[in-house]
View 1: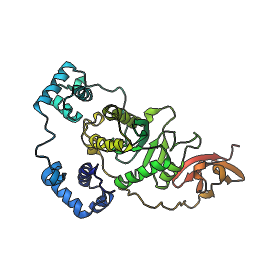
View 2: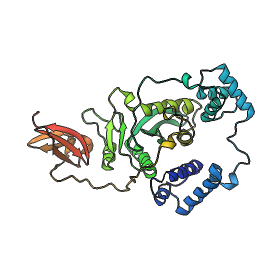
View 3: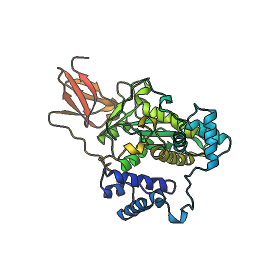
View 4: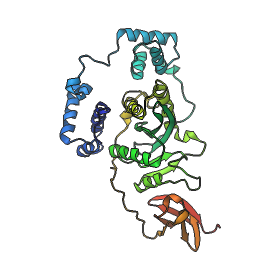
Length: 373
C-alpha cells in the first residue's frame, strides 16, 4: 500500500504504533505498508527521538506546537461548559464553531474538563445493559454501509469495518456504489494492511446478503475462500452489530453533519483524516476513555494474493453446484445457493441420522435432511 500525499502523516504515525506491538516481523510490517526496511527504521528512529514531530517532513515542520490550546480558547470552552454543564465535548465543540471560534479536538476538550474537575465519575451516564466483546483483536470484524450520502458530485456510500474487541476502525471508504466488486477491492486493501480476521459479521442486505434461506453472495463466498468465517445479523435486530451502528452515529455527528462535500474524493479524504482521529486521538467511553489503537494489533494472518485451492477432508462427499445453485445427492436435488454455482461443496454427516452439513471450504453454509422432501 504506497503512502499517498493525503494520508502520509497519518500512515507514518500508524506504522510506528503498529511496529511497537511486534505482532508481525518488522520486514512483513514494512511490506504491508509499502515501504523499505530502511525507510521503516528511519521513521521509527525519528519517532523515538522526537515523538510525532519527528514524522513530519523537515521542510514542513511547524515552528510552534499546533496542539497547544490557546488561553482564549480554553476560557471560551470553560465558560460554555459552565453555562451548559450537561453538554459533552462534542456539543461544546459544535457551539464553538457556530460562534466562529477555534475548535480544539474532542479529546482536548474532555481532558480540559477533567483537569478543572468539571466531570465527576458519579455524574456520568451508566448504561443499563451489558456489553459483549471478543477477547482479542481480529477475532471478529463488523462491516456495514452508511448512506447514500449527498455530495455535490453525486451520491456516495460509506463502507466501514470495525474490530469488535478494540473498536479500531480498519476501513472507512467513500464508494460510488454498494456493489460487491467495490467492496472486495476496499477489503483487499484493508487485508493487505492489517491481515485477515477470524470472522466477519454483516447485515442481510446486498452485497453480502441474499434471501434468508441462502444468504451467501459472491462477495461472502470470496471471504470464505480466504478462511474468514461469515455470519449475518438477525433480521430487524440492528443491535447485533451495535458497535458499527454506534460508530455510524458518531461519524454522522462529528463529521458528516459538519459541512457539505464536493465529491467522492473530497469525502474520502475526510474519511481518512477522521479515521486516524477516531483510532488514535478520540477517547472512547466503552474503553475507559482509552483510544481504540491502544487495544488493537495487526493480524498474524497475512492476506494471500491468490486464493487457496478448495479442498475437503477425507470422508466428505463432494458435489459440484449446478445451475440454479443446486446439487444432486442420494437421488434427490437440493438447493444450496446460487453464489456457489460452478464450485465444489462438501457433504458431511452429522450426529443426527439423515442430516448432513453442506460445507464450502471450512464453513457450513446450510443443512439438508434426507427425511424431508
